[in-house]
Amino acid sequence: MRNSGNPPPLHVLLSFALAFAEAATFSPAAASQRSPIRQLVKARVIPDVINLFVPSAKLEVKYSAIRVVNGLLIPPSAAAKTPSVRIHSRRRSPVDLYTLIVADPDAPSPSNSTLREILHWLVVNIPRGNVTRGEELVPYVGPAPPIGVHRYVFSLFRQKKPLKGVKVPTGRALFRTRRFAADNRLGLPVAALYFNSTKETTA
Ligand SMILES: *[C@@H]1O[C@H](CO)[C@@H](O)[C@H](O)[C@H]1NC(C)=O
Ligand SMILES: *[C@@H]1O[C@H](CO)[C@@H](O)[C@H](O)[C@H]1NC(C)=O
Ligand SMILES: *[C@@H]1O[C@H](CO)[C@@H](O)[C@H](O)[C@H]1NC(C)=O
Image 1: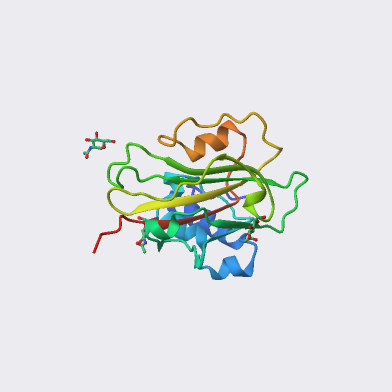
Image 2 (image 1 turned 90 degrees about the vertical axis):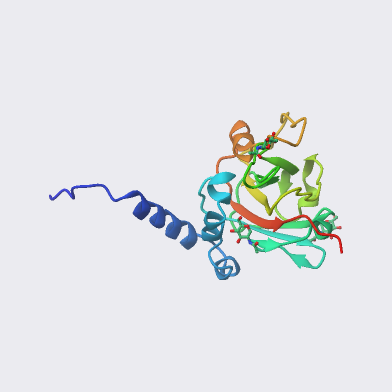
């Protein structure tokens, strides 16, 4: 048997991983959303906030009439109130509970993100469906980006068990989505979505 010499270069492996992640995207609606994983990589949500993952659920986020799609620019005033969030998933797990994290990795500014991440919302033990049925650990606050265009990242995790006695963050700054997921054994995300926002100029 022949042994092929050198291992494939990293960019080949990455594009393979991307293709796999995209192919595994379960719903036609998500597929038509022009490869969400690629958009998350392009905007560096992966790896700034979360690791590469295979989508197996879908997040539907609405600020009244505005439906969030990756990269959409939403003024802070339009995202001030808690959005409605629905979780769609075909995969049934014995523990059908989710954790939703919304965080801004670009604080105080995208070029100097020394406060990365600002936690904007944290809800655990969400049954599939409507996020309002989950347990809110940190209430929603809307974007208030002082400088530059900030990304607001919604990361959804499928829990392996109900979460109890979660260490609730005392402040919003210097939060890490990845670390929270690791501390609570959430594994990789199953869905993610981001929008952009920037300070509104008056008149
Ligand atoms: C949103 O932010 C990302 C990351 O900085 C950028 O790639 C994308 O072009 C932005 N989209 C808009 C509409 O500003
Ligand atoms: C980056 O932001 C911090 C505050 O978080 C500030 O003290 C520092 O001067 C800033 N650095 C630059 C290069 O703007
Ligand atoms: C979610 O549930 C809340 C309260 O039960 C309800 O007000 C809201 O309209 C629901 N949202 C969606 C998108 O179904």
